Image (cartoon, rainbow, N blue to C red; front, side):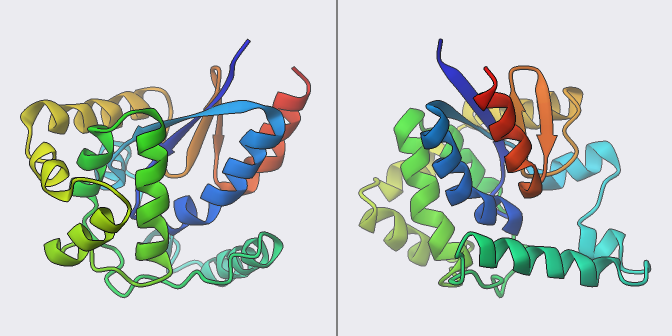
Length: 200
């Protein structure tokens, strides 16, 4: 039986970047398949009333400082020292999600692996069409075709549907994972996911 970890994903989430490689390693260890579901975090926040933690928790003494400490611990544990906050954060990721939604299977994985380091290690401005196209072309993608796909009404609807359906399932933030019907939120839940898979 093929075991699957579904990842609800948006490029704008730094935690989605941080969890990506550890998740890939976990899936490989457990013989699990990754399913990527592109969903728009901004739309998710609007539908759920959620907000980015740095905004939501700004008035809670110590909470954002502790979240930063936890992030640094995760970075150290998984040797993700190339990470740096994108200077344009929070950026509009909708076109990236539409491009991702136009791809299937391994091409989705390659797309994420091309853009994650460009955005979260090299500071790519995702609104710079030429710079984005250069990254995609270098990774072997047809950047012009992907840009056109991002304007396709059917592709746009996929991202809308993914976002709404994720919220209906209980998703309120990113990264969220599903193993079967079991939901896990946040990069700190990788251990729980692995325990579940190992027990099957």
